[in-house]
Amino acid sequence: MAEENTVFIGKKGVMSYVLAVVTQFNQGANEVTIKARGRAISRAVDVAEIVRNRFVQDAKVKDIKISTEELEKKEEGEGNATKVSAIEITLAK
Image 1 (cartoon, helix red, strand yellow):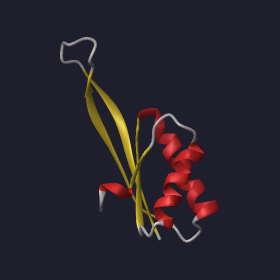
Image 2: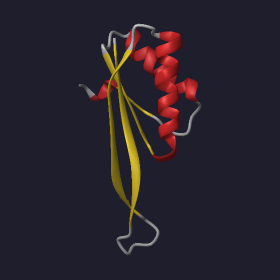
Image 3: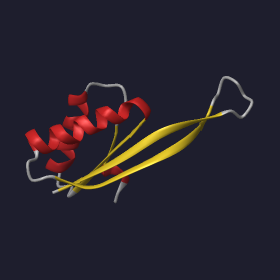
Image 4: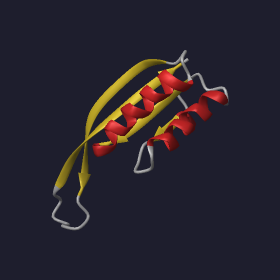
């Protein structure tokens, strides 16, 4: 799948990301992947459910991948890594 059909979830409001996903579908994408890490995971799930239930009723959850990523702490510099949970939700028409 092309990277252009991916929506990265951050700190904006849920509806901003819903609009991004719906726009991808309206531009002809058959699949859109929603990616999030850490505290944004719950926002990613909200986005997927709002898109499926309100805007693109024929969209289905094709795949959900969960993982753990290690991030280096920039401040400490001693190589301490923090583990952060990540999720990828793929919606398909």
